[in-house]
Length: 303
Image (cartoon, rainbow, N blue to C red; front, side, top):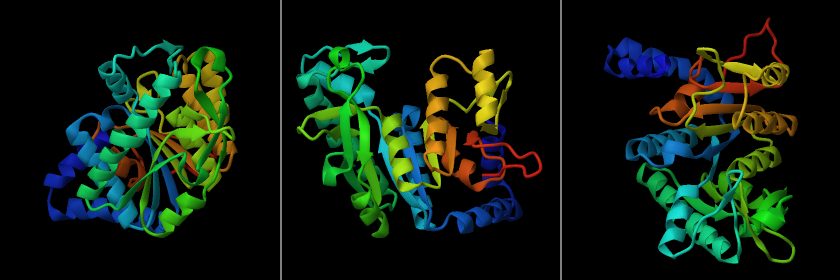
């Protein structure tokens, strides 16, 4: 178990002074982030395990209650595959991307905009959050274009533009937008959008304080340690050396593209730990890896 998670769990059983210290450590961050916008990409085990789902919903609700605007973007690939199977459709993938023909886009729309999205809204509501289900089709939120491999992948799209008007309206009303990553083009075609890409584009458009990827990895690992902070030049060196490799490379490149686009910081955290979201945001050390533009050794980065 991550040591900070263990420390946090122990604090719950510790005397009042220890619990008070946890809360005092959070106070400067609550002040700092009040009124700011966080975009959270929700995926991995945190979407599947009942304990983790409830923990995540509690964390998101708390962020909203202390004055942080939370915009949630979710995936749902496993649910799409299950629904397709029930309908007698075979899911095919090319380099990890779902082949999405006319039949499959109906399944994507039905599953992401329907059950998956509304289950998240219901879960947040159960924990006191006021959430609203949104798709990229609502109020022109996600405008898309065919992806570069359209002949092979079909209706898998890239984000062309984000219309933030509806998202801003919901945030100003104290609501939590829960966004299914489905977009459309000027011809009315509907596209399946990668949730990471959608979250990145939304964070850039909103000039979000943070984009947080809730995944199944603890962060960027170098040797036996998880990096607390990584800057662009360090990441380039690690990729060149093969320390960062495979499927982590596009995630890292996307993180820095989002930073370059105007988001404040990017965080990669492990959703398999309960309350990892709060620990990353409201403690000095955090529990995952944060991406920053440049490292300043004279000014150590906190969260």
